[in-house]
Amino acid sequence: MSDFPFSIPRTVVAQTPPFSYKQTAANDSIVCEQWTTGSGNEEKIEKLSGLLIKPNSGSQKVLLQLHLLGEWSLNSFACSVSFKRVVDGVETWLDTHDETGLGNKKPCNAVFGVVSLPADVNSTPETLSVILVDEPNTTKEVTYDVYLLNASKTAPATSSTFKLNRTMDDIDDANRERGISTFTAECKG
Image (cartoon, rainbow, N blue to C red):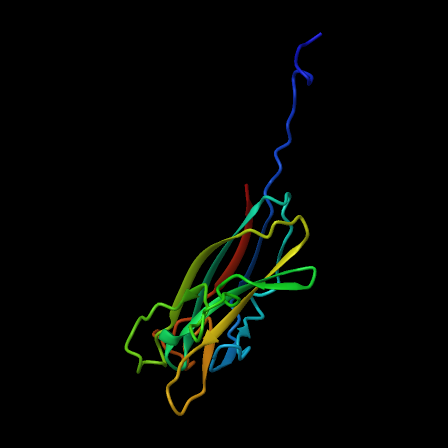
């Protein structure tokens, strides 16, 4: 008889942490109205939203990674991305949307890198890459959505269009890139 509380030899089956992703080469055109506090003018990126994952334990963290490629028609420096978590129909922004005292400051999880002069809105795509650790504290299925925000105040425009995975104009030219955007979720811990 062994002093061990289990038999020897023992086989332990490693449990793979849940992983999920959405990847798209779609060339969607997303119009974003000017965002102001409380306006609700966030625009969901449908092709990357609805990412599902089910943590194995309530203490697991969810590592979110997003790489986004596209071009804004106006003022990419005023545009950003925010994540939203949905569990059992309860929506939670993963940025500072609900923070007291935010005032007119724009909540966001990441901003677009400015890659050229603001006047070049035809052939120079912007990129955004972000990593965020979420703590959903649940073993229920979690849905993650990605939203665009446009806080540009350039008159007379009140909106800016984001061309997902492409440049603003779509002529057949080597300087008009096409790409792929990816959103991943992986449980850790």
